[in-house]
Image (cartoon, rainbow, N blue to C red; front, side, top):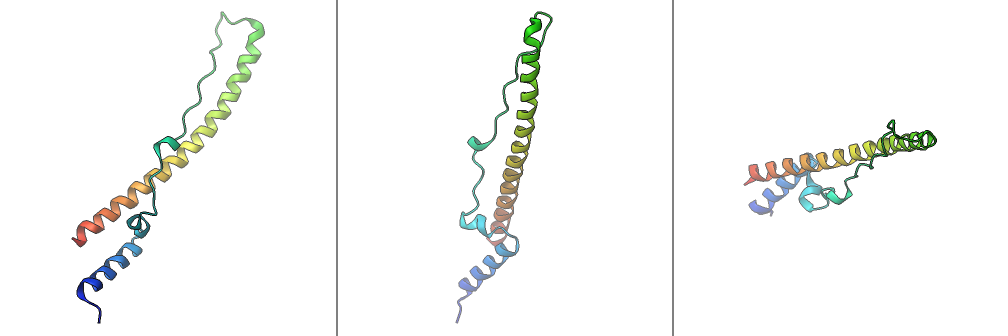
Amino acid sequence: MVTTSRAGLIKTIRVFMMAKVYNAILGDSKKPNNNSQPTAPTSPPIITAATIIMEIPKIQAMWTQHQVQMSTYNHLLGEWNCKNSSWVDVNFQAMGILNQAL
């Protein structure tokens, strides 16, 4: 025969599984590391009137490369923010279920 506390545990585990937060309870869900957050690339120099005519194509090429780097950065940052937000949501939901169970 299943004891009341064991039955309660099984019921709570089922609630966690239905809420899709069981992995957070087990510790399998890890918060994205802040060190894995992408960093923005540094901007190339600005073209000014003082820029020598010969340097303009080089600086323009640097800005084009910077735009590509920024596009990649924005994509990676969006992915990181999504993972982080998802982790926060799951953990808050798990904590809410735990608080209700207690």
